[in-house]
Image (cartoon, rainbow, N blue to C red; front, side, top):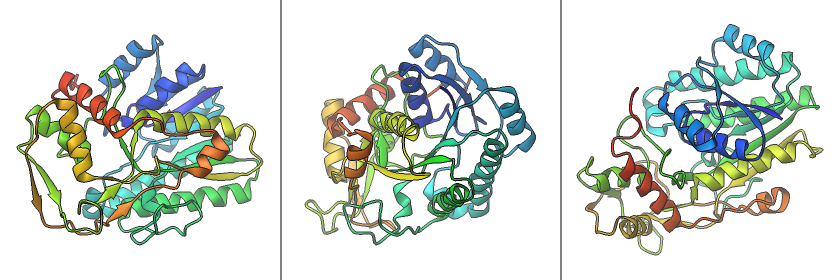
Length: 339
């Protein structure tokens, strides 16, 4: 199968490319490199031992996207491309709506014109909104608390409408929780372009000396240690979920399938901190500060549907995630080089 991976140089996309190639798939990548470094590609080629065909452009460019589908034989698409920072989306809502929605509309239009009907979409647990009961199941109503989350809700609806109009499509909506970790080689990993928005990359930068200390936003939540609970999933487990979903699209009768990808376990901020300290081998500086607006006490998945229908289960522990994150950061203290 020839699989187009949009955003294939990004954090989750790059790990998925490795597993696609290991599974015997033929992969090509399109990435604007707005949030990724070109050096990722040479590292992917070194890991896989395969040359990669890469198109460098923005999916919102209708002509270039159309030309890509006319030029290449494509059997399926895994769609990662899009802006993804929750806080930034609040500051730049129009940019997020334009980028995430327009890129998907252009992509889906090209797919329809060229009879490419298999699509795995990178959605998010943000579609469950602020007040969903835990563990969160796929049958819950969708909502959002920020523009990034709303783009995921809207794209899910767009794709459902496409499947109603063209029932030969097979679409997977993958809602995942908090991806962390890195490839076991330490060669590729998460490299935020600015101050990290998420806990583990921030901890990584504290441990490597780029940040002074971790701020923990609140220790008075109704949780075992007072800090928020989140469902952290290793990026390698997450990539494996995409491979399983893509395989399932070949046999499923349903035009649209929705699966949570998570561990089903809520891990507290302090638990993650202590796991990272074990990986590093020393205590890390932190301080407790006031709650952050919009944070909730607990968010974790009900992953049973993915286990039953995909045969997929997250297998790596929080210690595995932190050890792999630290290996990546310690080997690449400044992230990917620019050139």
